[in-house]
Length: 379
Ligand SMILES: Cc1ncc(COP(=O)(O)O)c(C=O)c1O
Image (cartoon, rainbow, N blue to C red; front, top):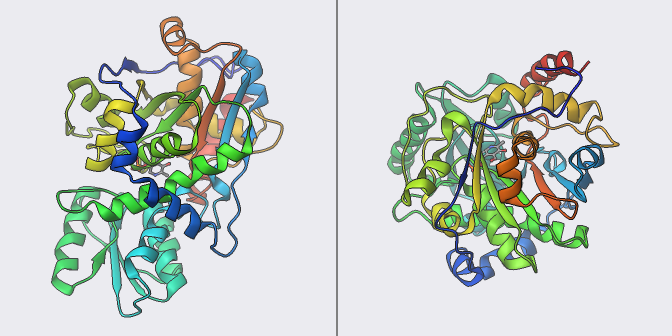
């Protein structure tokens, strides 16, 4: 890769959703607008609540010759440093309904579990968290620090979820999961309603109409929560582009088929939390007709992008963005560099593009390691 040119990224795949048919009413029928309004009302009353910054990536917008590139900096979300703080913790609050003898449980890749643990701690109830062997020790320690009992099991995320379901059933623990399955939709809907607050904040942080939004997806909860927020709060509907790791492009593959397609993740991505093989049920219902395009990306540009954020190559101010904060930037540059994708998306001088900086240094050890690798590529 050419060191001098920071903007020479390419995507792996770019596809168009032939099922696109955005209907506000339909979306707000799936994630009810009252759930969205209630989530904002509750969360905005939490102690220390303040909107996270909407930062202009002015150096990137200059390079791309677009009007604005906005970056929603979720590293500043409470002290949990990720958007997940809005989901799990809010669901714990709603489900517990003030009962002090309830025990909540969840399976997690890290950030969701931290949110559930934090939510349980805030209201003084016990919390059990199941993690797989892929979850780092630092992430496990962070959840223990919040008072959770952390149970590590062999296997991957799916195995940790199976164990969580089995043990929780045995002991009567209430599962607070961000993925939906048959007859388990309320909790994931509450987490998505929590995430939709991000769009409410953005709608009062800029007067520009957003023309394009790039949304990272793992199982699709964040993306669908934000799409529902767009349906509720934005006057004009932007082009919605889903971004996934090349080896975990389950939304892209499902949209290509028109039904949920489970894929085998052959190589785990360094985009922890986005390395998922199956789109969740409720997000699917929303994403199926609301997404314009999908992009899949390689891990190779992640360290360099982390370094560009930290070393002010994209904006005036330093930004601490963890690995999952980079896919929006990587895919936007990739689309800009590809004539047919650029044309299809209509990226031009009038574009106001929104990217989601999902997390900060949620795992400081991994962040520092990736930053160091990335720095070598920009200097
Ligand atoms: C840290 C992190 N974890 C997980 C995800 C995936 O979220 P979801 O599984 O709701 O799509 C993202 C963003 O897409 C993320 O930034």
